[in-house]
Image (tube, rainbow, N blue to C red; front, side):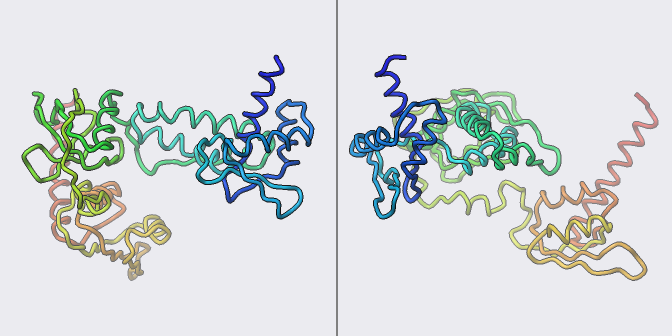
Length: 341
């Protein structure tokens, strides 16, 4: 390797080792890390390199203690510092979880960061955090569907339109109808829910906000026309309206039910809501549950998932729907048993 190339690689490696303030790193520590990477350097050469790089790369030296400690300023023009251990660990552990939540196009963009995290932890050898990363996993609660496939061009154009606040012209295929519809949309936000990502936008000529599943957008292009700003739009407030969890009413209701001991134990550790009470039933191992919940489909689907581990008494609208579902199931399975396969 030529001397010039070796010097360039050494300077680049040195810059990657320096953190951004308020974190700092001592000069002898930099020397040790450079030697670990295979560079034959002396403490004097490291000090000389730091002084040469300090002005063009906005490095600062803390001379209040010996040895001196170095860092990038917060407004440094270029960030080359290597990934730190907590960041690498967070990325490593989140990669598996995000795989089932984000579109493939987004995962492809995050791929280099995930690889950096894996390589960084791999280089730590017997470091405790690297070993911890091999022992810790996140497991989703319930069945997780594969994320809907989104065309890279769709993701790119929608993101650009939202970021630059420009109109989008889209060809959209609704779930209930087979024909494509042409819309001019004013993007307001993006929401990812389970395996589907939605563009929240208004249609040209209308004020109300609607949701457009990105995987149903067949074609899209960003227009030069500015979109309506939706200045008062707040994505958290929008989600809180219950529009994504099929809320049946704005007010909270009291869920009253008897639950199996195992479900009671689960709810005592992970409550259904902030207002919840579990009480004993006379001569019975089951518990009586009282909880203030939203009257939404998500909570009802959770109840359905418990099957015969719960007996609901209120609200009445859910009791009626459970009775109707049971009758429908009886009819459905009676047909199957009589006809066979």
